[in-house]
Length: 226
Image: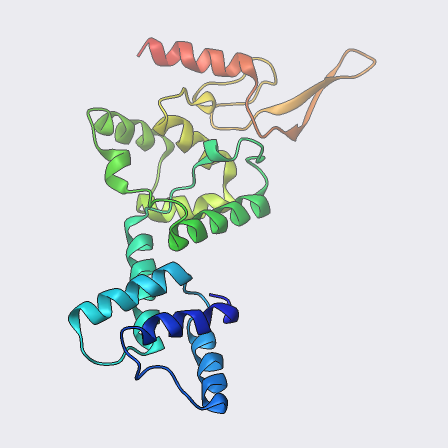
């Protein structure tokens, strides 16, 4: 909340409880500074609603700490209901190998959930349904010795594995489950850029962030045959 909004908030509160507003100009200025410091992260509309709920159940004057506590509880509840899963489809221009960009996007996503701009991504909404067992079985092919939630946090430093997991959850073929006939990458290895030198030889040095299309087709065909 901006400091300029504090006098308006106090004026609204005074309509229900005149005890809150200070009449002395010096005290009023000190009050505004103090409330602004305590409510700096609280949206104005939320604060106003918190005031209404307070006086609907209490005859005691409301303090800025009461509003801040309600806000912190709301943020905590939103983040607890959010599974923290990164949604790559929401960031089509983000390079899967861009770790810094990934972390910035993840922080922005969690901030949007905390502020209420984005609804929490509920675990049940992802795992429910007839396909849940199939997704779990497919994820086991990646191998893991830690809980899935921990694995997803570690994905910030393992973008290739994160991309494989996202493909499996979405029902798409895991391209790295088959070798690549274009760059000769083995199963589980990322594709490499394949260049042809003047003598006709091929080089494959730089790791690609996405598999070769022919490898994706091979993986899809293998998946359909299972």
